[in-house]
Length: 220
Image (cartoon, rainbow, N blue to C red; front, top):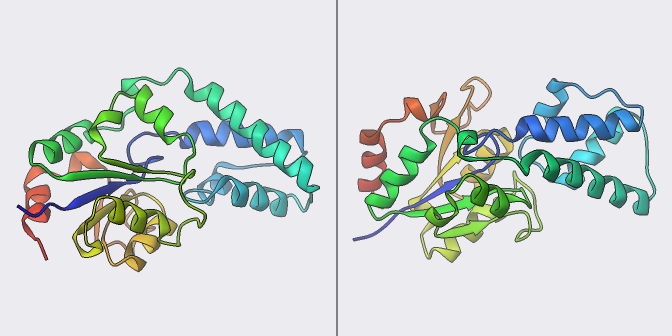
């Protein structure tokens, strides 16, 4: 039987670590004398740590020397790691566990496609690491979404045709990347924002097993 590859973004799809990113970036921005809002944090979804700091500095009309820039990135990551160190299974977003287990029972390939460099740690903290056949994260790619590199690497590693890959994303950049890769894109979140996705669901509670079954059967 041909298998499809279901590729999940991490932040905002499997777990809500956006709040921890916000707290870590806000602490760093405050130290630099820059106001940093929740609305601005939304604009950092799906992009790399480097680009995130660049944008914060742009908003604050500031520049840093390369050495100091790297130090600030490290500092942000240390703050973030401290926040996520106490994560557990309660941090899984609703019905993520059901979806992953349904796909596993139906012998489908499951991959992670995330910009996070801490993805493996988080998956272990929430005890779903073993459900993934392939993990492609920020340590494996050089181009950030909307470049499709992360998803295409997941397809190659699972030996799955991009046409038979389904991507779950909560960011505009991620949806664009999935579409550019020629994959089925499913937006998880606000459909008015993720309007380029082929399908939209507010969360996984709205996405039932019969829909997953339709996706599984529709092999190209």
